[in-house]
Image (cartoon, rainbow, N blue to C red; front, side):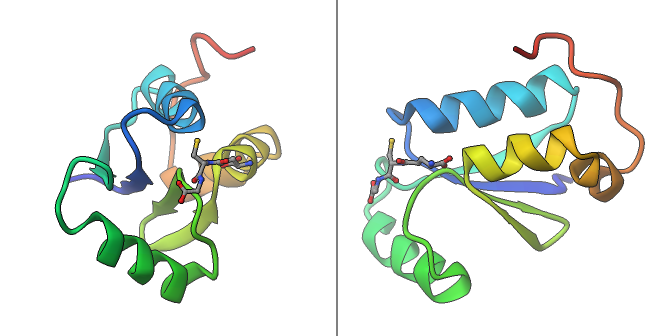
Length: 95
Ligand code: GSH
């Protein structure tokens, strides 16, 4: 099971960056790629209704909304993300 759900677009550099963070932490994620599914536009509308944001990436951990790439790195830097994830190792590559 994946505790991390990412609304994503395959070409989006911020999405790549946020996935890199979870990979470096050894945390599996499920990414919903809005640009490669016919349902993308309606799923993006659901994202807006849930979060008032339409940008990708948009990250949920255990159902809790974290936000975009910047917000997720910020949550990592202040330790909020690790608390939500439980014990994870330190990021291996993080600049
Ligand atoms: N500061 C945002 C973050 O940290 O997540 C940047 C995210 C962003 O600009 N994403 C672009 C986006 O979602 C795609 S690269 N644009 C609107 C859209 O695709 O509908």
